[in-house]
Length: 506
Ligand code: ADP
Image (cartoon, rainbow, N blue to C red; front, side):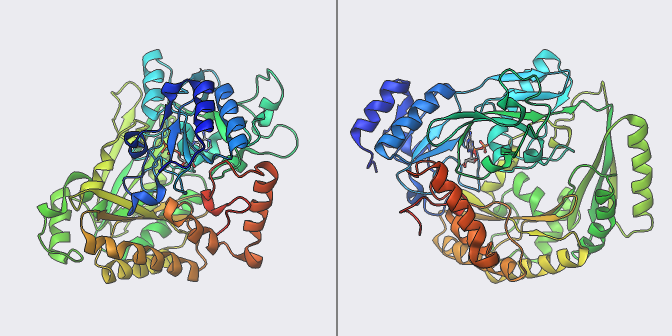
């Protein structure tokens, strides 16, 4: 599939070199979303891999001339949300993974990264230079530091809300102009990655989950290596324990004692990463209680599990542990395992200590065949009762559609993000026939309670955007007006987050 004007391909090749213009079938396949139920819906026309912001600007000018839709990605590892593939079939992927510059300021704990810098790259850079700064990494850390923050990805340390740690961007606008936000707007400012606001309106969040520009540099705050990390891995025996566990932790999250977002998740989180379904049962349909009990027994886990961690000075961390102990005093936990890491100990090798890992991606193998998953992630108020209610309704829908329940509730400062995965086998037509209607039923259920998703797969961006309906979708009108003003030819990521250019609106 390639409906791009051949003259445009030639112009792109002249701008960035023909080796960086990828239009064979193999190339198109490489940039497809292999987790998508129907990959062909998102097949790109090809991909371009510029090496610098100047080359990106040149590509944007050509794209405007020939009306070529571009889909910017950093490393394209956004699995479960679309990977490297565009919303619209036939768009051209703008692959920024060759742009890998890292500028760390060890003294201030900040870094300026280009989009191609992966979590492993940055980790290796800090380790090899002995710079005592820690990353916050997502569960699967193959992706890009910048791309993950721009898509509002999360991690497990106290710097886990990645978008909130962005400080300063360099952006190629849809007309090819180049801007720097915040203090970066002052040429040569030493404060670009230090002070967010700059002067006047702030634009950093405008480029998160949006299609209003192409980010070519991103400033990010990093956590100074703490003196200690301590906490507990708690296990809870019964599904009903979710409510009181959240109500025990949330006040400590809100008052600032707990600074990371503890994520309480069910037994399938471990089982799907470490094993495959056929190791437990040959039966279709939801897993029965005996299988669930066997899984829990094997991994010594509860129905729910949560890791709580404190980061910082040893004295403070130890005092925090005492407060946590008091909060859980006499609470009916199944078990708790203490964790303690002190400066000088070898790295713990886990995302809670900022070490990148990729093994959680193995959960795509749970059902066997060509595996995949799609994420369903509504946000709700931080209440145990509401979480229990949400859990029961979602669980019932998983049962109704014969799927295995895979869920977690991440505790933000003032909200819960209920991240669910629907794991599937793309080679099982009966299963695949249920996934789409199940997903739509879940979104409708959340929306009926006025909960919206924080992020979604490229198949469902319109569906989710549609739920944000105050005043007859005033937010969409605002997004569209900004889109039209900045990108009149509609060349950047049409359809991203349900924002469409003129003439393309569904
Ligand atoms: P990761 O490799 O970290 O998973 P991706 O490169 O897949 O991240 O990016 C996730 C999404 O974020 C992309 O689909 C795109 O919509 C957006 N995005 C990523 N990088 C950029 C960028 N440099 N400029 C604008 N949007 C971006």
